[in-house]
Image (tube, rainbow, N blue to C red):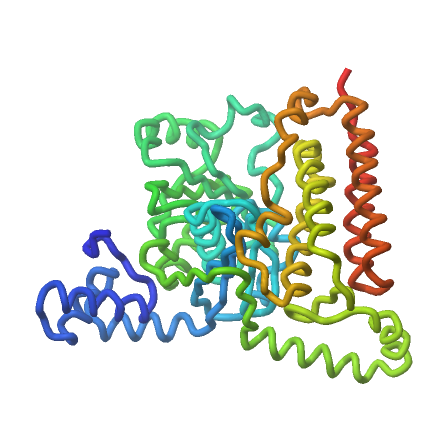
Amino acid sequence: MNIKNLTPTTIGGIKRLAKQLKKANGVPYSAALDDASIQAGFRDFREANSVLSSARTFSVRITGHFNEDGARKTLVTHVQLTRGIRSFLRSRDLHVSERFHKMRIVADDHVEGHFGRASETFVVQSMAKTARTLQFMDATGLRPSTATIYPRHTYSKEQRLPGQDHAITWRDPATKALILMDEPYGYVESRSKERADWANRNGYVIQRLEWGGTYFPEGRTVCDLVSHVEKGIPIDGIMAKLEKAAPGFRESAEEWKLYDGIYDKPTPCEISERDAKSKAMSKAGQSRQRASARQGASLTYGMGLKRPNSSLPTDLHAKIGLALREAVCVVSERPGARNAIEALRSMLEDWANAETKGNLSNQDLFALYYGSTPRSADIYNELSYGKPTAALKDSTLASLVEVKKWLVSGYPDGVGRDRALKLTDKAITSLEGFETRG
C-alpha cells in the first residue's frame, strides 16, 4: 500500500505513519510526525495532538468473529469517541440501521458482531461502517430511523431523489425531525443538476458532507445530506458539529488485529459492568437463591454467558451441525428461522470449543457447524422463490425436532440449555408458519 494515500485519524495512527515516513524519507522523527499530521489534515503534529487528544477520549473496541477458509478468526479494532456508547446507542438502533450489520452491544466500550462464513475484507468493511456510524452519532446526537423523509405523494421509487443509493434516515430525538444521508458512488456527480432540480421542485435542500459519511468513503462513495426545507433537520447544524469532530474512521489508516480462533478478552467496561452485576446479584437475597438452583447445572464462559455443565460427544456436535446447516439452506428466505438457527450454531460452536478445552484445530472446529453441506444442491432444487416443498418443510421440521431431542438428552437442565432450546423452538415455530410452494 502506498503510504502517501494514508490519512490516519488517531494519534497512534499518525505515529505509526511517521515511523514509516521516517524510514522511507530519511528524515528525523519529529519532522516525520509533522509530515504525517499534514497528511492527516492538520497543520502540524502539535495541532493534531491537541485536536485528537481533546476531542476523543473514550476508546471503544469493535470485535468481529468470522469463519474464513475453514478457520475461525477474530478481527479487532478501536474507534475513539467522546463518551461511552450506552449514552447515545440503544440495542434497537442496531436493528434499525444496516450500518450495524450483525452487531450487538457488549459493554459501554465494546460492540461485537458474529459474521459466520465471511471474508476478512467484508468483515473489515462492516466493522468500519459501524465505527463511522458511532462517530456520527456521538458527534450529532442523531439516531437511525425507519421513517422516510418523503411525503406520501413521493412514495414511489421513481419520484425519489435521483441516484439515491445506500441511503439511511436519521431522526433528532428532541424534535423528531428527519434527515436523509444519501451515500452513492462518485459517478452520481453526472446527475448533480438532476438532483438539484429535484430538490428545488420538491422543497428539499441537498448539501455535500465533506466529513465523508458512514458507508464506504475509501471506496469512493460520497455523502449528501438531504433535508426538507420546512420540516427537516437543519443541515448547517450537523455540518457545524462534524467540523469540530475528528476525521471519520478509515479502513486503511486504523490498526487492525487478526486473531486465530476466538478472542474474547474483556474490555475495562466489560469487567466493571460484570462486577457491578455480580454485586447486584449478591444483594438479591432470596431471588439469587432461587436462581442458583437453576444455574447449578451451568458453567460460565465468555462474559457471564451460561453453558451446560457437561459436554456432547464431538460426533454428536457434528450431527447437530449438519442438521443446522441443511436447515439454514431451507429457511434462507425466512428471517426469523434463519436468524435463530444462525445464533444457535454460533453458540453451539462456542460450547464445542469450551467442551474440548480448545484442543480442536480451527479447521475441525469450523467443520462442526460451518463445514460443507453435501445435500445443499438437492435442497435448493426443492426450493422455488425461496419456498420449500411440503415434503422438504416437513423433513426439516423433523430434523430440528431431532436436534432438540439431542440437546435435551445430552445436556442437563439449566439456563445454558434453556437458551439453546429457546432458539430451537423459535426456529421451529417460524418454519411452521413458512408457506410451502405449489
